Image 1 (tube, one colour):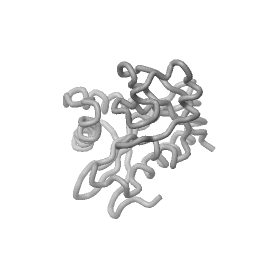
Image 2 (cartoon, rainbow, N blue to C red):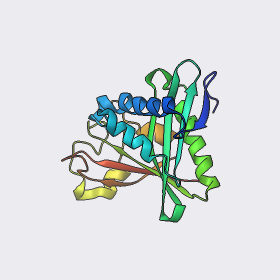
Image 3 (cartoon, helix red, strand yellow):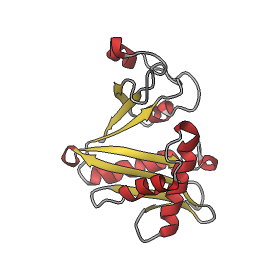
Image 4 (tube, rainbow, N blue to C red):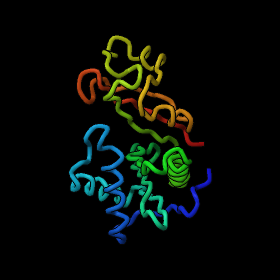
Length: 189
């Protein structure tokens, strides 16, 4: 997937205060209206700093005029065989232009270089935008996964499905009654 004109991907490092602040700002803007996460600038900065660990991957998309317009990070588990994508944020004005896909593709490439076989992520449904939100899924979790569908709103399930991810699990009530975390994963080949 081609990047929008002038956009480049780069490692996020401690050396660029401007990029670190840009990633924190983007995190607040991307998730603030959704669930209030990272609205405290210090919480957002802490998440950005955590992504810079020696064993982690942290990448930004930079536009010469707009600065940081995308950010993705990954952290290893299971001895580096499985990696968690967390987080992914794209500036609103750059969404639906291939930037999110380009960031995920880039992360997949880097994870594979480090020996990763699986990439996974969690995506909450706090607003009942999918068939597993707003309901008690405990009675039939496999059925809830098998019959999963996006109902409305901005839930990113469709985006992840288009990138080849599949649902591998649910954590019911992760964010309160009827507000699950949906676990997506993808084999890296």
